[in-house]
Image (tube, rainbow, N blue to C red; front, side, top):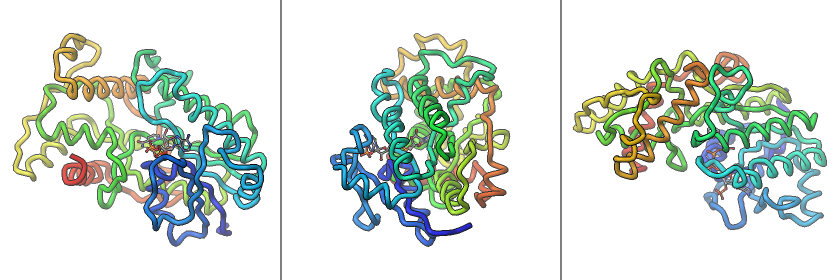
Length: 338
Ligand SMILES: NC(=O)c1ccc[n+]([C@@H]2O[C@H](COP(=O)([O-])OP(=O)(O)OC[C@H]3O[C@@H](n4cnc5c(N)ncnc54)[C@H](OP(=O)(O)O)[C@@H]3O)[C@@H](O)[C@H]2O)c1
């Protein structure tokens, strides 16, 4: 089924939104990009735009505009959210939870199917996780807000899908990203020989996915008219291990004439907090995040759940070797982000 759809894209100016906009041309859909009135502007050639705010009732639109939008739209890609980690629970509520509630209200009025961008990290808070994510983990409040959104969607009974990406990296072909992501920035920093050690649990997979694979999957899902399903946008068992990730960083550094002595990988559980406290602020911040992200993966048994095989089969997501994409992301990051 490939009839034309009218898609409201929330979070159009974000990393995922921009990747969706890049993948959309040529597909049978009309995209309406929601951007915040005083938020990040989209490039002038980004197509149809709507200034609206998820934190406001009716997205901050007047009644007539809201109804007109609801008449037009049959699909929502809900990608807007507060994605910064380490904030108190109440900071995530207005956009991540109440914003999703408003998207649900809108979908009830318009009859739209909602495709929600959640996170693979919810696996660490699932009942079946081998370890429980600690309350002090920098991602916990953010992840919980995404879980609440998923629950709201389930309870709504609306047709919807949930996409759960792991940390995203740049485009699989070019390394491009509209905004530097933690993985790009930290990997660039590691490649510059700045990391004294890497606090990562033994046996963990380092699971990062190029942003265009997520965009392709959700757009194809819409084209096919799928209105149910939960998809882990991760590599799972295919993901590289830490030693391989460091090798990619070392190769990248060597290509720039900066030989890198691979930093030792240390067990976060035996890490003396003093060791982190003694570091310069940037090193302390990056390595605390790395330790906490490692804890997320460890809670899932070292490997994130994955739907990659079915995403490839049903949605034509291309086979991309993660280490190749990671190398391109590093090249892009060192040329454009640092
Ligand atoms: N990037 C990743 O690695 C990753 C991994 C897993 C899951 N995800 C999920 O994927 C989704 C998109 O992530 P992303 O990386 O694109 O995030 P991002 O780059 O931080 O962008 C967030 C988007 O949400 C918009 N937004 C924030 N508050 C809003 C409001 N009140 N009303 C309307 N729009 C609002 C932002 O607008 P402004 O630009 O104006 O602030 C921006 O467009 C998120 O829900 C995130 O949880 C992302």
